[in-house]
Length: 445
Image (cartoon, rainbow, N blue to C red; front, side, top):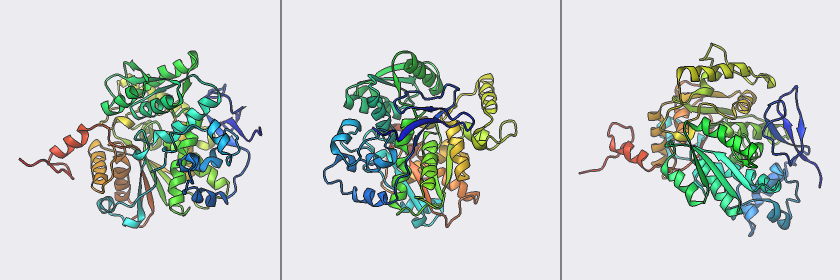
């Protein structure tokens, strides 16, 4: 087997390399890792990917992740061999990413004041577990299978637990899910139970749950599938791959994501860095990360709202002491992330360093929106006949805010990622019962 793929530390003065079978999420010096590839994929693969949209009975062509398997071939297999694909690649019958592509939404465009042809919104909630998590979970569990893991472990605000439980059940492996007690939407938690995951309730928030889950993975033979796992990032790269493909590789001006743990920001940045390095794209779109005002870590640090210093990737040497002081400040003041958009209710984003790298590479921006603005964003998507959860509304609300600030221009082409479907039934019910909300449609007596 050729050694085309390997793991490498992202720190420029460290750069330690590990074999692809390593389950480390950090190098021995505590820096995060990337999956790297020695070979440069040919741009002729664009035609191959397009042809695979007629799957011809192959679930690996049907899959919106494995259709791009040459660009994430860390298993180092013959990608044209159905036998090898079946042996190595995890898939839920090709359903992951299958329905994910960008759409024009006229009512959302009107709400934002942008030309309809310039706005694309990509609903990732049509993945089988109902969120973008399936994009990365399928590759993380593929690597878990590659290394012979018997149990996967994660912390979750809801969607990760659903996705991890689903793929674990389908592969016949155990799954432990650490959740912050009382802070998970029942619709998400019920999925984890339905798929047979072992729920472990943790007093505290998501950050506390993540800490315990990483300890479980390290000390009790678990395999972590949170986005600190570099193999999960590989699968999430296919979100921008699909967007670019449906735009005929005509690069948009902006790609907009909700914040949270910043796995999506990190994966999008890595995808764009690779595509640019490989000569697949000539222009680099700007990434915009939209946080909730109640969970604003990235925005606070990136925009210099803490200690008047703007946190930057700084070519691989970010001021990590500034991050530590910010977290100490949160602890000292008793500040906990708080938003109804529980999917992005995260105070210590696990991928903040790779997120900074993505923002530096793309000249990106970070901002915040209110819960009310996210609810409006969620609701106007619904008026176009598409479903998304409150956290996804951050993308729409963020585009509106950045347009009002004239950072995004009216004639820009913008792709907004809608990360998950609605799983908390009472959020839209409560929204529409309040006649003061922008798009409220209260019941008649």
